Length: 450
Image 1 (cartoon, one colour):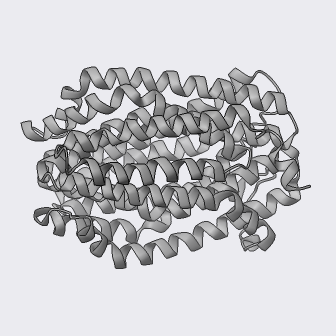
Image 2 (cartoon, helix red, strand yellow; image 1 turned 45 degrees about the horizontal axis):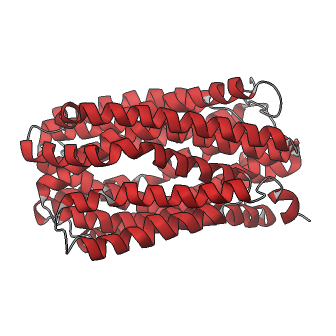
């Protein structure tokens, strides 16, 4: 079968990064579209209480999957590095260890999610009038979380070798399937919010299986052989070394976001629905950020593996510039169109007002969000995952929670909660920017292996 990987260690930097980022952008767009379709279908067919129930589970879903997905990201750093260095023996071990880790992580997440999320939802102060719907949605969702983890692990592996096209094709197909299943389960079979969760997990399972099928049939160096799927312990240690900081960072940030969601919940169901609708719209602003950060990490990892140091530095600068500019343009559009976009999810004026207020506070600062994620992606690609972890834990967790603890009782307004986002984006951007310019992140791999 044709080898769809892209080696980024030679050729025009801008052209390579844009060609790699383009399918990532389209894939993220379709994923966001079907996530948005979920909310639109639920909100329009089942009402604002069902929309609030699904919205209230978003931070909890991220909390539970973030640790496993973050650790799995360490395999992407290793795979891009070995692929760039053409060290195919180590590449094979990293590939099969990553698949084994994804399978185990998916099973663990299923068990934890189905058992403990109702208790956590209560700790979050989820409104009682949507509690039963939230529990139904979350239990069905986590029953199929193996497909979610498998897809993310395999997609990350394919992207690490420069293959963004095949995950895009699978995602487009499964996104369309998810929308069709949503309409069928909710509109035809009247299964409620549980039908929305079921549609999502069926689509995720299929996308994961399609990625696995591709990796089983390719003739490239990163081919998966079912007989070789096992933990290679020295490789697993490296995956954990590079990925655990990201996993811890994501999990602790998710805990902080649970605190944020709890503060939103305190303002009632309308606030939960309105801010949830905004979050779906905001997801589109993350598209260029996510696309270019993955591109940056892959580019930096491959070129440092090949000892192309100046090329890695120039590619990092180009990717950062693209992410920041694209995110700010989208933020400006969101600021201007917020009433129309939020109003697509709910017809309740109060809910729309909550969502528009949040958009007007956060959207013009998307450049800071892009800069923070972009700088972190450069450092992760260089094997310096601890530094982004320190930044995110300090500013996106400790400062975020402390701000809410002290300021919300003084200024008891939901806009006080909303301002915590641009504040912490700015602080982390300054910290990571100073480190990026002053530290020697280029020679990290050589020092670690010395």
